[in-house]
Image (cartoon, rainbow, N blue to C red):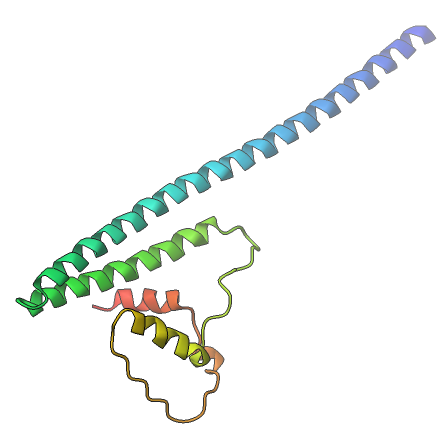
Amino acid sequence: MFWAFGVTIRARRENERELVLRAAELARQREENARRAVFEERVRIARELHDVVAHHVSVMGIQAGAARTVMIAQPAKAQDALTSIEFASRHAVVELHRMLGFLRQEGEADDLGPQPTLRELDVLIEQVGRAKLEVEVVVEGDLRSLPRRWRSRPTDWCRRLSRTP
């Protein structure tokens, strides 16, 4: 009688150990499936991001070529082409920001870094000058930081500007 009771207890403990091992394996598989699903979704979003950016860059290239071709003979058409380039670039930046927001993990730091200030204006002027554009800068008053409520990222401004006609 005690022997049968011992066998039953032993079988039950082995069964419990097996259930614990099976539960641990299922939890590992569930975590792996979740990681795989997240990875696959990120790949899908990256492909979509590539498609959106490639489309807008292609449109900008075509419009820039058209503007260059008609710039002297038909300045109004050149202006229309440049407006299209401006809109396409703003839209591409907004889409990039939206997609990258999806890709960024919760709690992940925004690695865009601080935005440039007027102290970096000389670098910007030099870059624009390399594009053979004439730039005139007039600074009045002392350089100082903007109040916090006026600060925003360039992408915020692009989002606001893309809403205006």
